[in-house]
Length: 313
Image 1 (cartoon, rainbow, N blue to C red):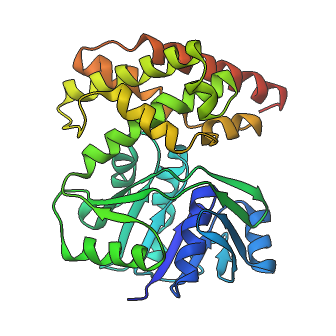
Image 2 (image 1 turned 90 degrees about the horizontal axis):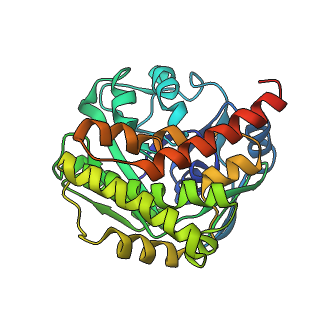
C-alpha cells in the first residue's frame, strides 16, 4: 500500500525516514524550516547513505506546511523542543482520517502534541539503533537501523497501526507494533539518558563512554536513576537489569555520536531538557533521586549558555 506522507522535521532521522519511504514509492513531502537543506533536496534530491545502502531520492520538499495539502500520514520528526510548534502548524496537512506519528527522543512528545491536536489519531514511535547524522545539505547518513517500534497513543494493536507498520516495512525498516508503546518510550528513554548526556559531557562516541571507567560510572548511574524513576512510576520494563540492557544497546552502535553531542559540536542547543533533564522531574514526582542526571544536565546547559552567549543569542 502506498501513501501520501509528510515528514515534518527532516534533520538526520527525518531525512532517513523521508528518503527510504520515498524510495519505496510513497508520495513523500519533506517539510522543514531549514531552507538551505530544503533547497538542496529540491535541486539534487535527498541522499541517504549508510546501513540501508546509498541512494539519492527525488521527492517533494518545502518550508510551507500549506503546500502539500492533506496527507494520509504525518510524521513529526523534529527535535523535542520543536514538537509543539510542529503540531500547531500541521493543520493544512490533516483531514479526518489522517494519522499523526510522532518519533522523538526523551519524554513528553505526546503531551505536547495533544495540546494542539485531538489524541484519537495520534501514534507514537520509538526508533533505535540508527546513529543518524547530517553529512551535508541534502545528505543524511546512518550507522544502523535496528528497529522502529510503533504503538497507539491509547494502547492496543489496531488495523490502522498494522497498516502503517506495513508501509514502513515495505520501505526497508525493521518494524514491530506494540500493545504498550509507553513501555518502549521509556526503554528508549533510559538508553538516551545513558549516552546522550555522557557523550556530550565527555565529547566522545558511545564506545568512548563504554571504554572509560569514569565516563561509564556517570553514564550507568544516569541510566539507573531513570530506570528507578520509571519503575516507581509504574512502567513495565522488559528488563530487570538496566545496566546490562544499556551496555548491550551501546555495544551495537559503538561509533555513534548521539544527536546531543552533534548539536554541541555545531554550537546548537540540544534536547537536554527532554532527556537527562526529565529524570529529576519524574524523580521528584515519584519520590526517587536523580543526582547524576541533575549534574549532567547542569553541565550541558552551562555549556549551551556559553556558546549561545558567544553567538549573541
